[in-house]
Length: 175
Image (cartoon, rainbow, N blue to C red; front, side, top):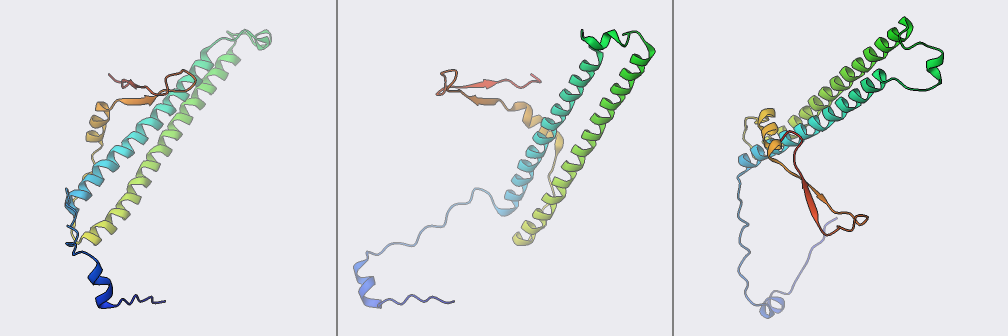
């Protein structure tokens, strides 16, 4: 469907003041620089995801190991002696299962990260074709890790604590 706007050439133009054409917006970064910036941002995003998920996996594993090694004062102790070979074998089995679960979750995480990188490569290829120039990839995990160490987490206040207007910072765990 085509829509055509027709104006009377003399009527509309004579009432409008002469306006200079809009200036072209200034670009701070050329398309090649933009692709490099996207690489740095993507590296940072993926590294943040990887570290957060790794931390959660490790915490879950530590909780499971702690639960396996703790002695509980409940009715089950009356039926199985805490020094019995059966209980020791059961604890070894549970410890092995917790370790295996951690390994599987870490493997799944690495697969997810690789899938993210593959998806980014496809999108980047489209961007390179649009720009018309091949730009070397600049995905660097170590640089992203170093950059993350410089970040500080800012948390907003809450209504429950009465400090909704204030925010506070949380220092990184590694400092």
